[in-house]
Length: 134
Image 1 (tube, one colour):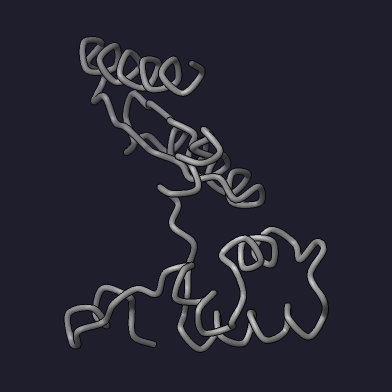
Image 2 (cartoon, rainbow, N blue to C red):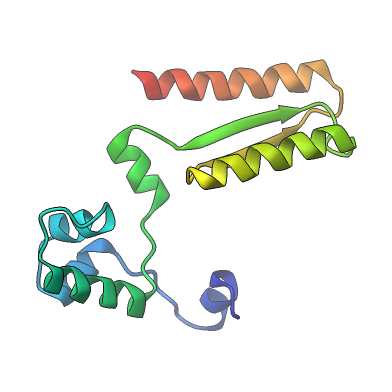
């Protein structure tokens, strides 16, 4: 299986956009968006046509665009003292596994038992959270 990174290096691979999917399916961007979010108010034929094009074009919604639109990053920041410590490794795995079930991303920071690094990371992510709450 070829990774997306390898594919982009080997060819002029260009990521499909929601606009291109809509144009190929002869529907609006809103209709494509509805299909991506559960298919509400979209006929089965239209939904099937859009899903086929999405699969053919290997379309993946932009996480950045989604977070800008919804003002939600769906990201958990986890700051650990020492990632090599088996206890923290198990904690990290548990958090990541739980986050994946809810389609969240996890950003993992390792402070190497340095309180200044840990405070910096916590302050950074705390500020990011505050910005998203405005």
